[in-house]
Length: 213
Image (cartoon, rainbow, N blue to C red; front, side, top):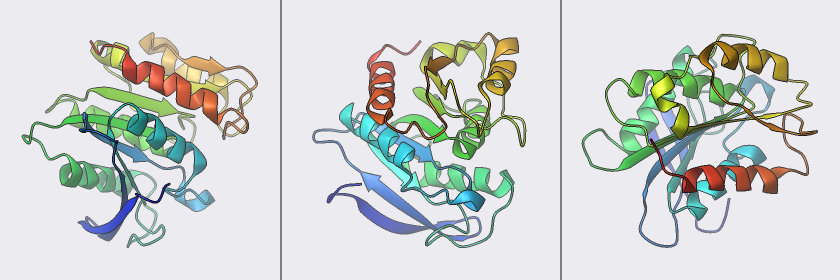
């Protein structure tokens, strides 16, 4: 992402997990773990939307942690349709912001990564506080995304492109509607937010700058 990006390998459930760390200029507010789009469709931690999310978190004083799911880049293993990928994400969280160490934790994901992140949030929120949740282009069609607890709606940002032809806006609304979960729609936006990444970053920065409840 920048010359200061620190890349390393940690031990994950399926072997090596490749991670990238970006630090804020001053003291870190906490750790944000960001999940990338579908591994079978060229999704990696270097995806432009994922990097945009990382930049937004770093801008707001967070340490941004990106990682490659199993079978991608330097990460061992093979695609597991979200099951193993959830375990990968949880392993990165435990490495970067272990429970009980006092660091604030945020979760974010794009597309397939957002789908996995909903399940990670559901799992982790039962045992620890998640400060912020950011879901972009959330995949809800191939497999159901987990619902977001109503008590967490104010700390959650869901962003979707109006003209997303990979994950239809109507499908995301069908997921969000029963929960009364607000969705921020980017007019004319596609799945990858071409030409609108600065807007996406600004939406995330505004959310991160708002009080959590």
